[in-house]
View 1 (cartoon, rainbow, N blue to C red):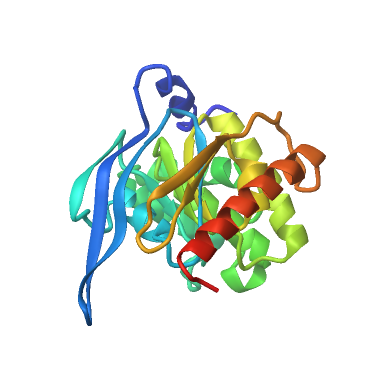
View 2: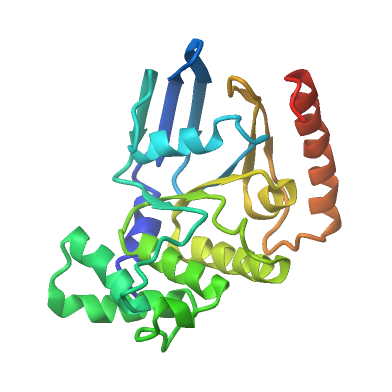
Length: 262
């Protein structure tokens, strides 16, 4: 399918990185003064790379994603992205008074796409996420998985070269989540997008990513990273996925014990 998304694949050959995080720290004001949430994070996401951020609750994963998205500013350090990132949250955040198609068209309008082109581009995006024919459906008519597909299409409508995903499948049942893992892997492969994906699910991280980054807790630092040298498509129950997941889980448990979390 020839769309504007094809430009993302072409662009991967001409840029050094999709996102560059250099010595980033973030503090928030608390009852006891400034609380350091992230400490000296340095990380590059290469063009076309799929990276997952993994760690215990409260380690700063979502905070880091918000910083990359430009929703907040780091206390120290610098973040550079190639173009404006697209952000997808755990909740679909669709407007219930709009149809699936109109939710996507809104993102196209905000991007500056002229009205005459929006319907066609929206139909292309719905087909990409395998929701062909759903343009006129209201949000309440869609299942949880379908809503997340629309949210993904809306994020892709921003024509960004990096997609930021904050636990987008956490609220879904296991079968729906498994199916959306397949869809996300396919879309990532077809478009050449870079993906930075936050999760606390170790097997999800291993199934999806080319690289898994483990953050420590209080404050979040890069504790370790793994290159996932397992051919796609992967299944969450595949032996190599399970084996690496066990290794990463042990490291995660060690981080939790070290910081006294339960």
